Length: 80
Image (tube, rainbow, N blue to C red; front, side):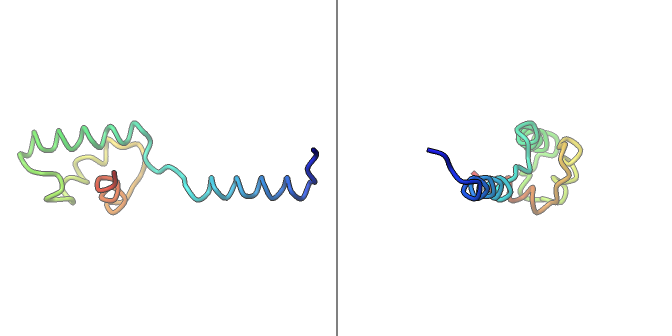
């Protein structure tokens, strides 16, 4: 069964909209760097990274390849 160009265009537009709704901010490497950063921060500073997010953000931001805000990093740490 052939689809009309209008139907195909709607399907393409719908797929594009789905891609635009969810765009990955942190790569898998960034997620791993964030987790390792939490461990390193705890080991070197003797403190919970969540206790002082400003210090942790400054500690780990060089390890993350993506430019993220402190709020985005905090959301990432809190999300499952």
